[in-house]
Amino acid sequence: MTDSLAERAAGPTSTDFRGLMAEFPTGVAVLTAFGPAGRPHGMTCSSVCSVTLSPPTLLVCVWRGSPTLAAIVAGSRFAVNLLHDRASQTARLFASGDPDRFSRVRWDAGPEAAGPHLADDALAVAHCAVARTEPVGDHVVVFGEVRRIVRQPGRDPLLYGQRRFAAWPAG
Image (cartoon, rainbow, N blue to C red; front, side, top):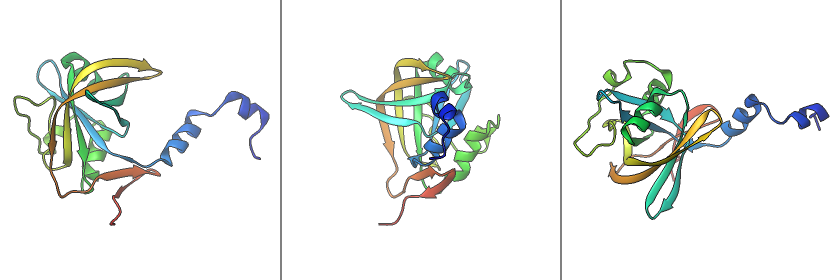
């Protein structure tokens, strides 16, 4: 055993926890929302989870200081763009904080859109109304009631694990 008594008593560090979670592959999404002035906001997110089928609800975890979170809360709605396996560049772009990210991807939003739909990069989009929020540490858990789903069949999901992107394995 390599842990010292002091390390066990202190608990895992944030680096330890980040390393643990890197071992858990997950899908990749870009959360999008419109700010009060109609400006699009978005960020890459791998913390997406289904909650219940009735009503259809999911949750996302967003850093408390995120401008995207501010837009989600202000507008009470957001979109979850589930990325396909050829969209790793878009995942990196929306993780980068580039202020011009929406000028570098094709997106659209109809009158019923809860946030920008990344037309070339999403295999499915869930348009959600904020049901509630719950602060946890330096993040906020946002519960979204899914109001509309747009799917583009024929694409495989993008995965992220062990600090790299990968395609869904061929079956």
